[in-house]
Length: 335
Ligand code: 2RA
Image 1 (tube, helix red, strand yellow):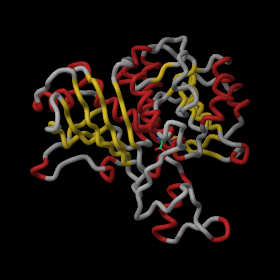
Image 2 (image 1 turned 180 degrees about the vertical axis):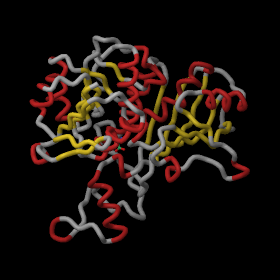
Image 3 (image 1 turned 90 degrees about the horizontal axis):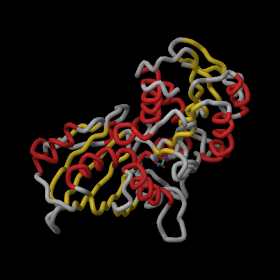
Image 4 (image 1 turned 60 degrees about the vertical axis):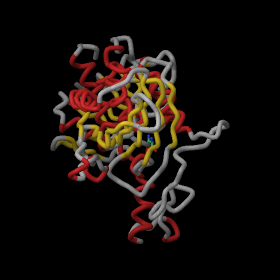
């Protein structure tokens, strides 16, 4: 398969290349696409060097699939051009996620919705992906009424500039213009917690919070599930963590919940409080799985569960999920 990676030099683009190689996706050629100033640079993949090309040259090279991670503006402009040329696009931006004509896919949850006619497929938001992996198998068994989620998100979700801000604040090593480290956030992130991810909307929620709400309904395919979210940035690198409170229609048995989650694809249960075993982003870093622990009954109301969900946001939250979509398409002969 010829694979174009649009945004190949960014944090997620670099991770896409790593994941394609690690998972032995049948790549015959990588076509890296990046902004104009990177054209002509080389990207190494599996011991071979590939030149970064323009999007026009990438389309002319006729890849089987193009994985985009270059921001919403680029995706809005370029994804349709690739799709019109018959190239299947898997897009990691938010540009197409809520478009009713586009599928929003977490393969373990709803890969079955995909057909050969889907030419632009949306990869969900990182914090949504890890949550729905846990919600879906429980919804199938107990029917979810309402979810209350609070997130603890890694700076890697923002990109290179935020990683440099944190490193700069922490070590004073990273310097940008005027010998000052770059600022990705309105406030210092080291030694701090910022209760804002993305911009605020008129309803007082941030875009990230509304993504978690709307995308969850679309991926699970059930608008009756009520979701409310508070999303927060922490000075953490390894992955996103979430405190998830789930109210079900029906009562559950805790041992059965653990068993369901143990058998859920892509989910690993790490839940042994007596031995201080629970998921943490430091240890989820560079893993493809989503980890769940602190599984316990919410004693304040019936049929309600609390749990703690952690995943590497650049992996399952972005690159791994996109590559898994490509694997599904290729396995089903859809590309
Ligand atoms: C974040 N969810 O962590 C975003 C990245 N897509 O900022």
